[in-house]
Image 1 (cartoon, one colour):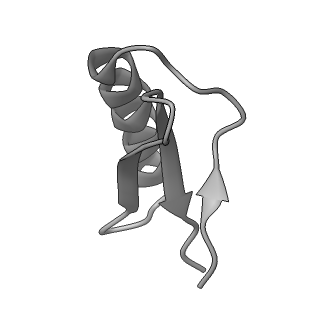
Image 2 (tube, rainbow, N blue to C red; image 1 turned 135 degrees about the vertical axis):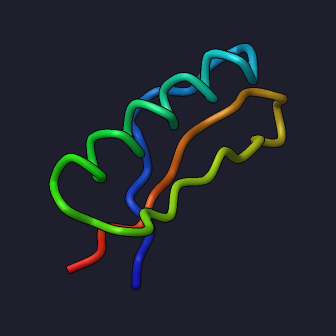
Length: 55
């Protein structure tokens, strides 16, 4: 499986956590049982969200 990265990076972990929660909720509403959503940190210190779409 490949990762899908959100297009934006965020300055704080709390904002990235909120976006990850929204992505996770969206996948649950689409019928996925265990969506895999992660928050990662870049070398510059920003935070991003990535997820694996499950078929």
